Image (tube, rainbow, N blue to C red; front, side, top):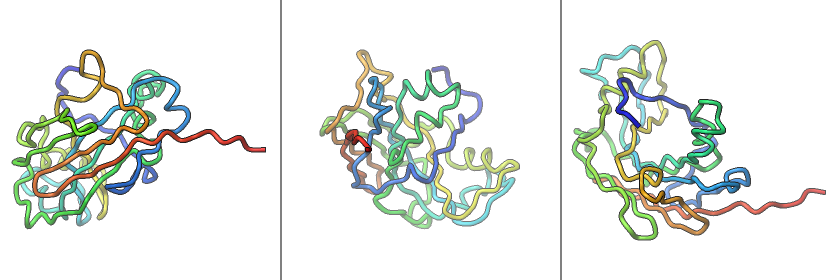
Length: 202
């Protein structure tokens, strides 16, 4: 896709959140066609209420940083969602993050960290947060325009190249695959893809 002029925004429900070592549940509708994808992302955790903050001091509102996996189903995101990305990214358990929240007093420059993804032990994304199109400060300043960010809000900040959809042929996640996303100075989340089994209800 072409490089955006502004950050592309979408919301994930709180039910999408899951732990750094929990399985990634794939609901029945998301099993119908291929398209399950990974996205390693730096996660900024808001520490205090932020509204209309300038880029120059936006990082003052960050409590700390984690790493997350913005699990996405491209068919649901781009074809079945009516133009809204949230449907293809908001299934239960599709936002693993952690393994800790490292204080912004320790990570003072979030734009100088290695970030990566491995699928079944093979590196598929390997980059640096310095290559982000929109840095954390710019993203938070943009998000807080007329919208109040609250303590505890999690901001997933975008993924580097190497996602499955961008490969030829595409690399889609399958049942049983193990996905590791890692961020320098934070650690890794390791999550196994787990297809939910249909249970008849009488």
